[in-house]
Structure formats: structure tokens, C-alpha cells
Image (tube, rainbow, N blue to C red; front, top):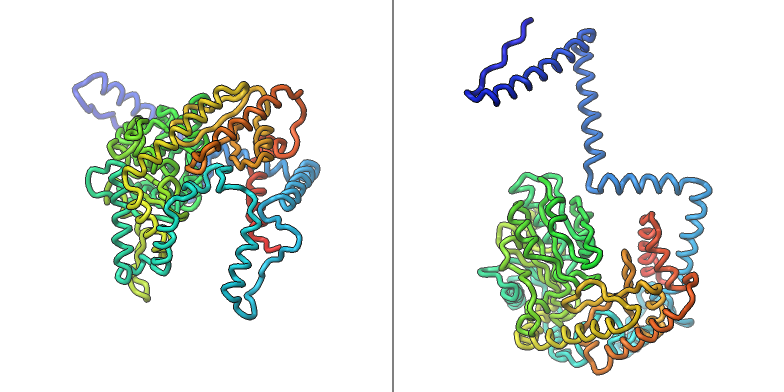
Length: 559
């Protein structure tokens, strides 16, 4: 059978020539396939076609999954190695030893004589007996957080409006905003909290959002909203988000919960900020959201939100600004005398912001706010069930029933502080952070990590094992955070650290430790320094995952 001649498509001879070349190549391929399959019957050709299609789909499904291919191959390799009788036995013995060591040293270790209550008392205790038990339990605490000896954790000062907030909490402890018809006061308070926080972040009109139980839930809700927006508006059924490797693990949790592929972008090894061009290169047709931190937790560095906003607009993707840590500092820094580049809804690409009120908003734990630029994104956060026999059910957050007391205390704290109160507190903390940075830079062997501009400060050393300094500071009564990749020590400064002498005492202990470690001959690390160093060097991170889960196994073990 003769081939049909290629059609002439346009008056452009160059374009026609390209089309003819393509047509000729396709004809050659078609003739070759026909020649090869002449020996087969039609049913055999159909079977081969189906088999190749299924095989191709299986290969694509293997390559394109939530977890990157390289990560899965690495896990597969380590899994095979661990099955080796020799290597597997060594690893098991090491893990078992680590488990035994954890069991002997952790927050679950109670002094001799303490027992666990494993069942309801046969007869209810009197108020006096309950308070007596509580006093016994409180005696277990040995970290002096009230004296500012730990990083973050408790953010208010010693006398910070506790009487007001505790009375408000008592007044609203039985309320639940799920029943808005019963608790109209709490509903009004939540709407006002969202509106006030939206105004702090320069939303020009009505802001959308809700109060959540903490930063993780705020991030979860935003990622769920961006995922569903991507599906409804852009038809994306295998979504991905792009986050700096310094972004909070809440984004990894959201990816795991909602089946979103997460791409981690390395940060600059000197500034510890993400390079916006690296983020842009990672965007593809399935990207629903990119992320920037203001600031990020490990080093206190603010990402270039303005550049990320430009990228979000250019590629038509969402931009979530995670300001859980500094959300009640950065909006007030300009008036406190420490201006920052733009980071909020004044940037057109910002679609959502998470802000923790239970940190520098100075309300009780269990309070955060997630904000959206518009209804088009926020309505994806709300879930509804319209055909339940119990009635129509809808809720805006993970929890259905929520603690109205948390909302009311948040409202009370914000109303009591006011704009001027937050500016004053921000000025105090940022001055303290700058004072700490100056002090660290004056200590030989200590290097500040990146350019921290808010409340978190991290430091490391190229002259000694920084984990040994961490162990020294722990013995001195400090409860700070250790970093990895690269190793360092971190503190999130709070109003507790602004008490007279606290930062000076920390600097003095850091200076003493640095002087000792510089003079100390190199030797194999021991104790906590060895543990942190070992954990950072283990290539198979699944081993660390096992130990992390063992931590919570021990946490809940009533013995």
C-alpha cells in the first residue's frame, strides 16, 4: 500500500521542511513496527500492547511517588544491608543498647518511691488529696525554666498578666466554639483574633482564617487547603510542595498526612537562607505551594520572602509564610527600631501565613492562627459532611470540638497587651538577642551561624566539638537545643531571658566552656557529645526514626 504524501501546511518553506522530516521519520518508525509485528496475530499484538502499557505504568508509578526515588533507593539499600546476618546483628545490638540507655535517662525516669496510677481510684480523692498529688508530680521538675535556663518553652515573663489570663480561662473553661449558637461570645472573640492578626500582617481587606491548637495544625490546615486548591483549580492530582530544609517538620507531617510529595531545598551553607533561584528550579506542573520561613527555627534567619513572592506570582503557585515562631515579633520590629524587608500580605504572592499566639503573643499553650489572603484558598480548609444521619456537620480545623478557653485567653492577652505592649516586648527581646550575638562574636572559637535577625540565635565552632560545649552547658543547668547538619547550639530568647543577668550568665558559661575546649587535647567524644555526634553521622536515618518512636514508647510507659 502506498504512503499518502505529506500535506503542505503553510507558505513557510522552512516550517514545511521540518514537518516533512518529522513525517518521514514517523513513517519509517511505523513501517518498522508493522514489519516486526507481521508475524503475530491480532490478539497477540493486543496482548503485547496491554502488557507494555501495564509495565510502563508500573515503572512510572515506581519512579513518581510521594517519596523521592533516590530516598527510596537509599532506604532499600540499607534495608538489604540490615538483613545481612553480620551487619544486621551489629546494628540490632547497637539499637538495643541505645534503647536501654534511653530507658535509664529521660523524662520518664522518676525517683525511687514514685509509682504510677494505672487505674481509677476506687473512691474519688478529696480536693486536698488531689492537690497533694499534684505537688508530688511538680516536684519531679528539675529544669529551672522560671529562671530562664531553657530555650523557648515558656515565653512570658514572671509576672506576665497571669492573674488576668487564669481568670479568663476559668470563666470560659467549659466553652466550645463548635456550638456557636451556645457560645456566641467565643465565636466573636475568634473572629476578632483572626482579624487583629490579619491586620498585623497588613491584609488590606477582610482576612480569612481560624484559631488552631498550635503551629503544626496551622501548617497542616494551610497545606491541606493548597492541596485541594491545586486539585480543584489546576487539576493537580499528585501535588508537591517545595520547602527549605530548615522549614519546620510540620510541613513533613502535612506531606505524610495528606499524601503530598515534599521537595526539600538545601540552604546556603553560610547564610542558612534558601536561595530563591533553587526554589524556582524545583517548581514543576504539580507544585501547589512553596514555603518561606520568617524566621526559621534552627538559626533564626528570615528567608527572602519578597523574592519567593515574585516566584509564586510568576509560576501561579501558593506561598505559605511560616511565622509561627516570630509572628508576634516581626510585625512590631519596625516600630521597635529594627526594620525588616517585607514578609506579609503586602507581597502579592503570599497566600497564607501561620502565626503562633502562644509564643510571643504571650497566651497559654495550645493557640495559633492560620491566615489566608482570600476565601478561594480558605474554603478548602473547611470540611463538611452533608449526608450524615446525625445532621449536617462542618468544621474548619482538625478538631471538631475546640477549647473555647484557649480562644478567649488569646483574645484577652492581645487586648491586654495592645499594639504598644507588643512593641515594647519586641524591642526588649530583639535588643537582648543583639546583645547575645555581640557577646558570642567576642568569644574565641565561637561562630554565630548565619545572620539571625529576630529572637533565635545559633552558634557553632570550627575549633572544638560543639556538642561538648552543649554537654558542659547542660551540666551548668542550661536546657538548650542542639542542631545537626551542621552541628550547633540554639536558643530562642524569651522574656524570661530578659531578666537581669540571665544572658550575661549564659555568655559567661559559654566563654568558660570555649576556653577549656580550645586548650583540651583532641580526644574521642563521650557522653552526650558522643551521642549527638553519632546520631548526626548515621547515614541510615531510619535507625534514628526507630529511636524517635522508642522515645514516645517510653514516654507513655507507666512504669
